[in-house]
Length: 305
Image (tube, rainbow, N blue to C red):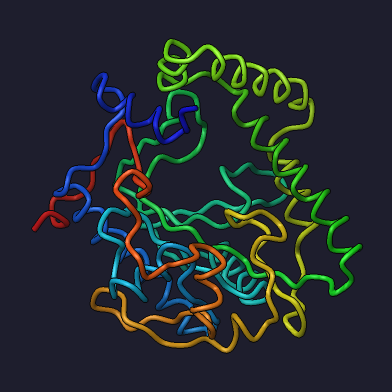
């Protein structure tokens, strides 16, 4: 059975709607992302906030001392208390006029359940850009590290609620419209069409509660500043319980190199990366390498020099 990535590759080959980054665009985007990172890192340093590379960015620092060659994003994570301080700084204007941000907060919507920092004056239209109400600019993601209960029953109960709310929020967001990519998928595979239409129907029913409320509920449910016991990343790719470790795996931070920058990494990068990628020092086969796709892309010419 074809995977979602298979369909993306088919869509890329079948027309001009969906594009993979060219080598030139990829390098330019990476320079842009590094500028966003430097700006956020400078704010964190000025206010003594703990931050570190996350996910594929951490893997890139360990295995490549920079970006993974075929990857085009940059992720950070922060202990919840420091993360909340950064949110307050963003609200107070610390990012300056050249940047924007979004995160779950009362009274406004956001595309995700974690902080995104955007560079204004750029254009990065994702695969949902046909109907998405959110910003379409180059960005980095910042994930909160949250404390977890050591009681397995309590933790699994919270995980059940959090993962359920996350799924519903995503379906509500997906129900807002149908992208050109989805219409191409519908023509490609009838089973996928049935699955996606069912998902949208459920999302439409659940949209009686707005998306902004669902993600706010999720954020309030998982928020926990206690870093003394178990710590995890409820907003991460492996859901609520997928990245739970003793705090000593994450803190205190260690140091590494990412491109030209000295960066911070989790305390135990081996345990952290093994959990995410297993044999993480081995390059994956071509067909399993994660790529990013877009509809439109434009950034200042200086990033091509």
